[in-house]
Every structure is written in structure tokens, then in C-alpha cells.
Length: 308
View 1 (cartoon, rainbow, N blue to C red):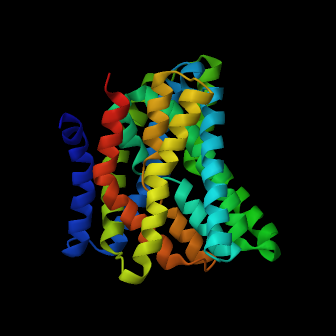
View 2: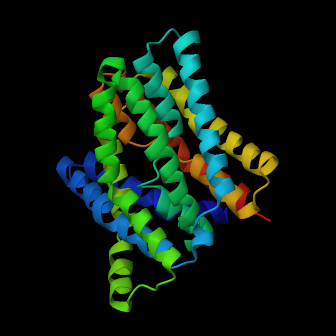
């Protein structure tokens, strides 16, 4: 029960954002502004401070990186093949489903949940998961959704969005500072700490507001349920098996990896699906459903990973 109480403030802020939009206490554009502030300013400050403040070896584990990327790649490939061959979906739709089944809501839900369960040391594996899912798996998914005739344009767009991604830039900058052995000046550390502290509440409120503007109808519920099952259950199981029984990493890395993989699908998956006309309604439904189910599933996974 204590683990559910530990997660209660996190999902309570999500619920507050949802209620605020439903009751029209906050305009739709207000949650967009909060999300932009969290993603572009608060979250990069949090990630930069946490990674720069510890030794590089504490933030980067090659075996974890390989195992997490291999797990995501396997789930991506299997979901794509099943959607393409067994469900007779086109490559664009199959790519959107595979991306939604593997790219987690790491930017908004990742920091508050991972840091709550594993403390500041969890910033390292979270940063590596962001690289695996956002820089690699989402890029592959976007190219597939774009199709062969638009692959070059999609590749250029992905490259620009990656280079200008503030979270990726914060990861690289923090890693460089940690590798150099230099310490952040106290005024800068205080500024980053103050700004980073706002990342969790603003991001969570924005997630709740986004949920308040979406809904699931009966026609899309079955596809959404299938994608959510893969995202919330099968993906974490694959991560657990590879990290624990194939690569034999330490229990800390196993626990963080499984918890990160169990997070719901990212809202950016819907943006891509909508942009490339890749069954956006079902992708949106999968994001909403996985987020709702994660209110119960994530605390359960956290309890399983943290208990002695």
C-alpha cells in the first residue's frame, strides 16, 4: 500500500490537470504552454544537474544501454510484423503501432516516477532510455511512417529535431561535465535546481490536461487495448529478461529499466501518426488507455522492482 501512496501525488497532479480542463478552469492552450515550459526549460535543467553532479560511470552503463535498446528493438520489430502481416495493416500504420508500443512518456512521467522510486541515481538510466527510445526507435518509426518517397525528408526532419531537442542537449552537456570532473558553480547549480524542481508538477498537469481533451470510442478500443498490453506488460517483461538473465546487470539497473519500460506511451507518438496520417485515432486511444491503466500498473511494477 505504501508504494501506491508514494505514487498518489504523481497521478493526483495528472488528475488535477484532467479535471481542470474538463471543468474549463484552464483553457486548452494553457496546458500546452505548461508542457512546452516543462519540456524546453524545466526538464533539461533537471537532467543536466543530475547527470553533471555525479560520476559518469554512475550515469552510463554500456550493458544496460545495449539491453534496453535490444528490448525496444525486439518489441518494435515484432509489433510491426504482427500489424503488417497478421492484421493486414499498411507499413505506415504498422510503423505507428510499433512506435507507440515502444516509445514511453519519458519526458513528462519519467522523471517524477523514476526519481520517486530510485532517487537521483535514476537519472542515468532514464537518460539512456531517452536516447534509445527517442533518438533511435522513434526515428525509425518516423521514417517508416513517412514511406519510401518521403524518407529523405523525414530523415532531415528527425535530424533537426534531435539536434535541437533540449533534453538530448542537456544529456550531452551533463555527460560532458561529468566526464571532465568539473563541478557546477554554486549559483548555476542553485538555478538549475530551482528550475528543475518545476519539471514534475508542470509536466504532470500538462499530461492530465491532454487526457482531458481526448476520448476512446468503441471502434478504436480493441486496437488500443492490444497496443497498451504490449507497452505496459510485454515490453517490461522483455527488458527484465534481457537485463537479468542475458546481460546479468545489477539489480538497480534491472529495476529502473523495467520501471521505465512500463511507463505509458508518449503523446509525441500521436503527433507523428497525425502528421503522416497513420491511424492517428487508434494511436491516440492507445496513449489515453495506457496512461489510465498505468495509474495502477506503474505502482505495481515499482513495488515489484524495489522490494527486497
